Image 1 (cartoon, rainbow, N blue to C red):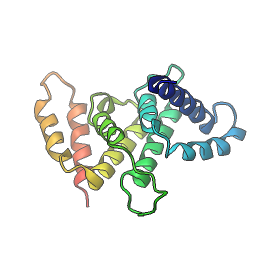
Image 2 (cartoon, rainbow, N blue to C red):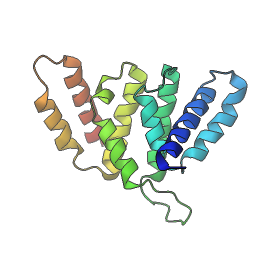
Image 3 (cartoon, rainbow, N blue to C red):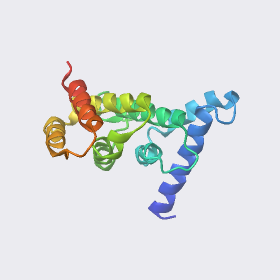
Length: 170
């Protein structure tokens, strides 16, 4: 099986597990699905699959699934961004996952998320990543603010400033 086919299987499996975790198929499946999601934290492709969900690339996506996806991303980042524990069994995200996440976090679609709960979790995640390993985030956010066209909505600038405030918060 080639890598693209395997990644598509991971995405489908993550999507189905997210559906179960938010109770789409009934609350009885939630605990097992939550455990299964935790098992994915060390699987290559999990971060990309969660970003796919957040981008809305799944046709039956609901807001609870988006919220669960961003919370999973926050947990993965907190547990796996660096090898703070020092153990051999500690999983550390690969550079491709880190860069893909950073690109998504400062991308157009993350600043235009409609669901406020999901948006606030994105803001929190940017701040977490910035504090761990992203010193260039502040200059990039300031540059984004400078580049806003006058015809763009005020909401984008407000959101950029909100992210900056969370990143700079001690």
